[in-house]
Length: 146
Image 1 (spheres, rainbow, N blue to C red):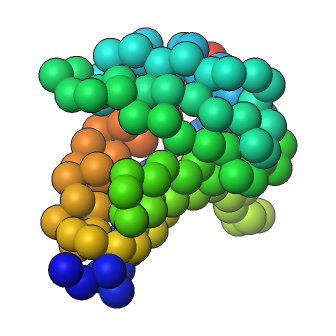
Image 2 (cartoon, rainbow, N blue to C red; image 1 turned 45 degrees about the vertical axis):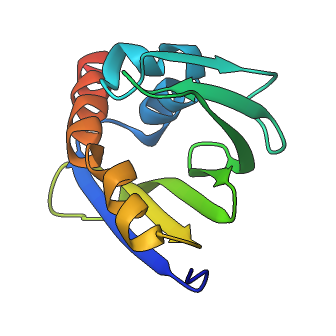
């Protein structure tokens, strides 16, 4: 068993939606299942704040318990899921892009950090739908911004 296994990757998409619009969607945890096909059921045990736990059930899989470990309004939240010695952290970042020549744009980034046994196998499996999830999030945010 190699518990020094580490896997990291970032996924990003640009959108015309404002950071505040994206944040309003992200902080509505029960609403995630309406735009994220990888969630069958989700429940949060308190406010959208560091220290709060949530339970997420992907379709056809066991539910997982995760904890919000950092929350910065309109900028970022990080959740952490532990399965035995495996730790998976996902940072969800909202980055306003500065370009004085064109319309305002925002980059949404999901950064995965998996550490522990089988991280290099489980990390890619966890993140396999992130491009689709980001596309759905950006589309919903643009609809709400219009």
